[in-house]
Length: 137
Image (cartoon, rainbow, N blue to C red; front, side, top):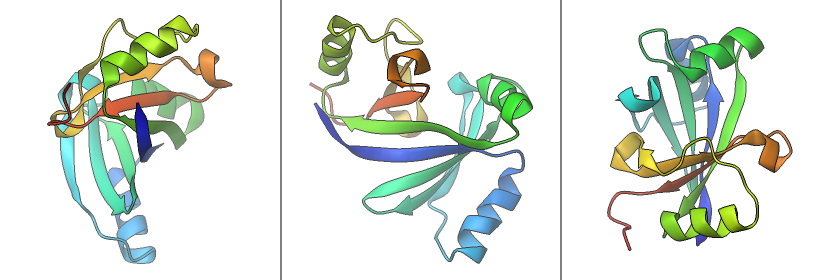
């Protein structure tokens, strides 16, 4: 079941500049950074309880975030919903006709399991479902 808004991801052309904006200008704290190799993304996490802002930038100048930045120049990339049973949520949503970008969840940041719903299924918004590590059924 979907339990929370896990994070709002913003694609940024300059990660260090974006970190400075959110931390120095807005007074928020940097929770850490992580290279998410499978997604070809470098991510910076800014906790803003009960959710997070995730700044994402292409890792090694490749991957889908690079394409997004080339087309749009930065901005809102996706919304991520936290799940306590990602397999059940995927099955339920597939039965309702949702299209996913992959057949099954894969490893994401913080060793979580993630899957993305195609924007065509959600009025043009890319939606990620994330099951944090340790929340397995």
